[in-house]
Amino acid sequence: MSLRHFLNTQDFSRADLDALLDQAAVFKRSKQGQQLAGKSIALLFFNPSMRTRTSFELGAHQLGGKAIVLSPGKDAWPIEFEIGSVMDGDAEEHIAEVARVLSRYVDLIGVRAFPKFQDWQVDRQDTVLKAFARFATVPVINMETITHPCQEMAHIMALQEHFGTTDLRGKKYVLTWTYHPKPLNTAVANSALTIATRFGMDVTLLCPTPEYALDERYMDIGHANAEATGGSFRMSHDVDEAYEGAHVVYAKSWGAIPYFGQWEKEKPIREAHKHFMVDEAKMSRTDHALFSHCLPLRRNVKATDAVMDSPACIAIDEAENRLHVQKAIMAMLAGQG
Image 1 (cartoon, rainbow, N blue to C red):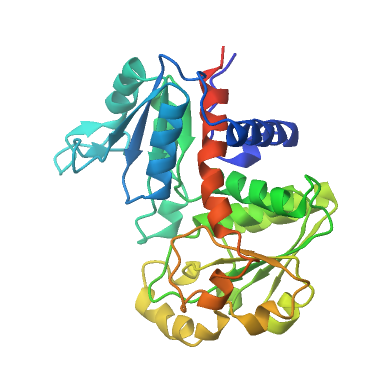
Image 2: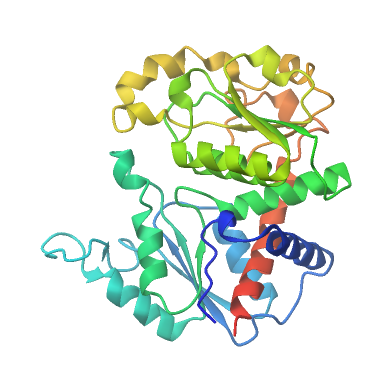
């Protein structure tokens, strides 16, 4: 059997995803297990983390395993990822050695590595994650790079719980851009679009201008998923129309790809659309919609206090579900072979 990683939910069948969600529900009812007894996972964080680190480290412990947390360039050597490079810069060792050595020590490897925000044509290659998957001889988990598949699973689990059904077809889902004082990664938006269309919802990508469309790869995935599941996918710049009758509002800020690495040029557009903040007036146009966000969230910038503190907000439930779905993912991957 070929080695299976967890890099993107599109790599898995719907039956696979449903099985992971079922297992996550089991773990939510009973936290302790022995699925990782005698096993270990190396968690490599190239970027800061709170929920991801806590949930993976705790999840491994609750399943009887051991997590080793590393921050390359801080408490571990800086790593070179370019194949054929002359290593005369800051990097002390190459991914070809790092991934293979870690594979001799641990049973799983988790990687969190954001884009460098300089050149999207480079960042969209997802070099760090793919290099680990190429050289590792144990399963690799994407803890957020240019997508965030673990967040996807926690999100869809929370929606199923609150709607009381695993069948989300026919639900109107609004993925809305929100203002943030600086441009952010598109990973969560890419993933929200992917999973919402994968589960057959009618998805609207609400953003200020066409320049805030996501990378064409994920736009294409959205259309293909919608066609396959009988849902729909479209983009809108009309706030009132997008919110009208919605069942789910998912908020996220991201930088406009045409301005990638030239953020001062993008700033005037971003500043002109602070009104995209999710507030009570917008939510009142929905059909009693659930609201969520991946967190962290800047209150009264991305969403108002009233929205965050309302019964409709399921962001905390979604965050909790990170623990359960990641345990399911680790258990599934560790059980290969």
